[in-house]
Image 1 (spheres, one colour):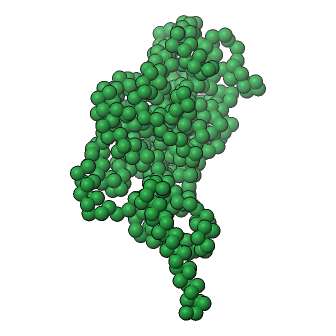
Image 2: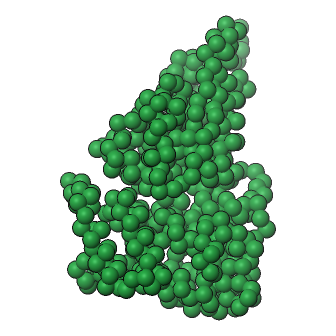
Image 3: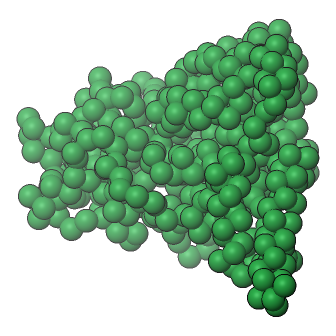
Length: 485
């Protein structure tokens, strides 16, 4: 035997050894579904192979259905391998149906049907039925019976509704979840209580300003930038407005992920970064509350309150009836299939830039009759594979940083704003509803008080007194004590 033949056989044996070890590692569970194999460079050093040869071995595992290549990220495990005939019969006998509770908007913002189809192709013995609920003020009241009876196996939950679960002492019903170091660091804390993560963040959505480019050109208005104040926005909205045709500015005044923005931007001085004058909470927030009223009541630039739903805001913007809207990244999915010429900018500010962040996660019911399968679906929704699908085919921002920041592959027909990656630059401005230091029930009462002020049913003194009463409630003191501890 020649030395060259011996070398080829040694080379081939090392390649086979690598493929066999990786295949067995996947089958045994050493490399679990949704996790990555070691980097190509590591495998090349371990098995004394070239990077090119390692890639050939990985291509074999791709052909066999064990892994999938994610460009510039790595090789992700997608299957534990083909089932034996007896295994298939066993899976058929063990088929289960999961009940997934979710917000009605998740179909659009999470690509829910697409993700579930992909999941069921990988796990054919697990069927998933969806129970949709609305994002209203009685979230836990709506969800609790299904959780208590084990009828809901897992569910999506927003950060504000998770706070309601915490305040009601209901985290005992949720299965603790493992941390993930590839998640954006600011997301886990929204669903962590007593150092336990109870829900896995899937997508996040900061508020931004979306604007109609054609309107700006027609009116000769410069596009928004990071230096815009609300005074700038109001002045330019007046220039963009055309009586009887369009309004310059719009947002949903009744949505808990919109109106608190003005409170979060209030009472902070540019130089000190500390609350400006006034002793009470009402006085601290008064600047932003006055500003919100001045916008809402200015019908030269702001549509009639009859058009107050988030659906109305999106519809009027698509129709060209409004020039600028305060909206979130998830809501941009509404424009993905349109021919609207638009872009996005950071929000105007009062003094210091602040924006309101919303996060959607998935939680598993500890009382589920199929907890292992429910956890399997939760693992999938958080996996690089599912997160990459969201990145490629939606405008929502994936919670996994490698997926969110991965380059787009192939041709995409979605109407994606040119400044889509703006969110990376405004991360320091992110604030959550938690930062108001109010219990969730108080948020509802606060909104009712603001509506009375916006409609002139109460004056500023009464407004401040009522806000101070809400802020001084025993429930709030418990929240503040917990935050301080």
